[in-house]
Length: 456
Image (tube, rainbow, N blue to C red; front, side, top):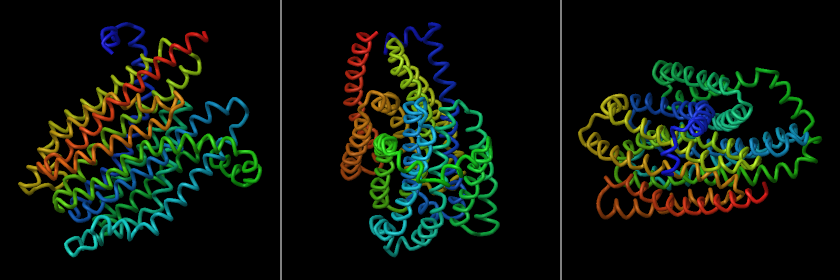
């Protein structure tokens, strides 16, 4: 690392960072815009009703899980395009991806129907003190079911376009979604007085417009229909591709979704500290996503460039690509931390946080959030690097241990010291897991460099 940082001014290293940055920018912007959709909903609902905002805070992790499924399928699509497109299997790759999207959506709908009662019981929403939250929660839970399909498609589309170097189109699509969502939310929530249902409808319409923009360009809708009209032609011969895609998608999904799943348990722990604390944690989670999703754009670009470098055995670029990605991730995390620090008062006003107790706990948790940003810098790129190195299960294990250690430490710290340590527990969990898996990644990459050098 030190050698890289010393040589960061060298022309070659500058070129790596520049190329990584240019490839990362659209995906990072896409990630930021994706989070802004939920952020906008939260912003308006917090001013509509604090109970509505609390209800949304409980459902955000579910949206995160659905988004993770879309990202995972998109990663599988990119991986299979790299491996099979040159063999004339492009149509089967596309059909297999569509098949995975539909299966995933069916699973989501089944969970929505049959998981409702268990979810409200898990979060103690049946208690009389949570009656208002339960009303808003129920409305939003079922209203956003159509949204899940559009979220899946959008995440796959952005990764597909990035692989095709159509980065401007990604920005156009997401700009359409964010601008329309920004306009429709106040109309549906306040003017039509639809509340949380209005927030759901605004998101559904916005994502529909964005996906339609993609579908109507370059005759993509016609190409899509030509695939689904004769499914038997592809179903018979897509077995191998579907198996590979499922393996990659499952590994990536578990690695990403484990954090969203962890948020469900963290929310359950937060609600025990009182409804007011849940609202604060809901905002903190939104701020965490504002860091995580843009950096996923960087890791997405790193994955694509790392895949190509490994396939061409460009051994001198392996570590340079990792440190280029990590440098950009560090810049994003530090920049966002500074923004939150300087505009925290504005944030409180926007989200209608007025009580002195809420402001006090929020100020303490924001300090913890800065530490959370810092411990997430080094592992972001190395974690997805496990996919390219053929050990995608390590991607999942790193996320699992980060959440597991984080939950245990949060539970102990909150129970024995106080709720002010809520975010510190999560940060310490990430730090411990990161240290272990960074050493594993370092060892694996050194072995891969040694093996590839022998083959040159």
